[in-house]
Length: 510
Length: 95
Image 1 (spheres, each protein chain N blue to C red):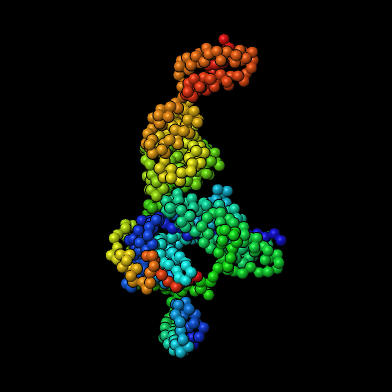
Image 2 (image 1 turned 45 degrees about the vertical axis):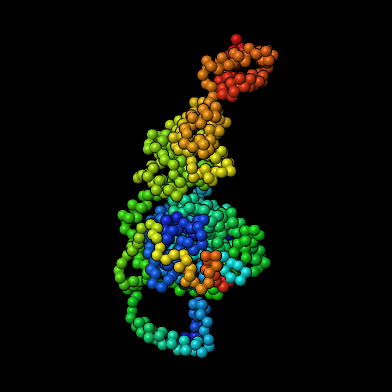
């Protein structure tokens, strides 16, 4: 039988605030010793009180606006009780009844809209490592701020599930609220999948696959679930509502241990945290700081950069920011400064200011430069082994502008342009302008017609070119390539080949 | 108000307590009495009253996002746990 899948996704996003959600300790535990970023609050020592991080509230406004969501004027926290060693408090502080982020939607590149039910702010749990006879607890991650984004069941294929997760990742990265490092669990997805006979008005029983940490595993887990559930229904069986784990190596979902027999979290209002009341002005001021989003970039550069290249580049917020800076400098606006991803939010805001302009580039020069740099990013930079490293240390807009200009004036061949571009990442060449690098590499093309003519004359006077010249005069068109090659050799590769060919043709037709 | 034995065991389970049969009996008694006492509140009609979540009427008690030195060190905090290993808290195996 044909079945129609219905999918809803919950996504946890770790926020990149400096401190934790409820205490003033370092929130960035990457590469740090276990239990070194921990306060007495995280240990839930008697008498310790949570102190709300205002930045996390600001980030919620940005994240919410990135998903076209309403920001609720009133929100508050609740306790969700459960016993597990990853949480010394014995409960998680979350927002069950009145979340900060209200309904909205995410538009996928395909145009499909996935509605957001709500998103709430909560603290993460600690990390457990299991051994043969014991488990070890690291509390560094306790109360790292999380936004949990709950979608409506608007997704109906594994591809859309993949695209939705990826678009969420992009939105959160562009909003500047997360490091977006999936490998380290900065974003984790729980996927609810159900299937029903095509045309059926009722939804099937859903199974939830928890804790997926890549777009690909979301896609594969959904595919697996659709096929697993289809087989059950085909045999006349019933799908059980359960929580499943995903094994990336075997590509199979399995029933998880039941952490608690019956889920009974006994939610209650968190008495230690007064409610959040956001004024209209505060929300408006903070929302205005939202940097350009993927859709803004699509609108801005869509006419200049090919769609498939643009979609690739959109996966790398620093590259889009750099293109934005390049455009600003081409249009003669404020000079661009190098920024890293973490600074993305504030930097993006200060570059664009308010209101955010999505001015379409009209000048041909600007379009050519943007296109050239976009193609260098996509085909040269991203192909480099060290590209991840390079992304945090991109050349300045001025350097890229000069490079584009030299390419346009044919001072650099396309090969030489790539070479100079790559050298900009070389620590030895760091910060040098395109011209200096090109000179050091000796790759500037000779466009001076007088100088070129002299080289052509030298080559034409050589005995080994006489036969080719005769052949060409007798109509053998293809030997022109040999002659151009000889001139290029004589010029040590610096001659502009099309100019050389033109001069050769003129001289040989006399 | 009658409290079922299953309710006591469920609550004990959720709270990670072990409860003996004798304890269960006296808890049934105690909880029943507490619920009876509290249920007097049911006599009041509060359908038109906003729930009170806190009594201080404070809001937006928040702080800036700045790292502050902690008064307790990692060693001091770890020393409070029953058992530690490699700077982590050692607990019975949980799965």
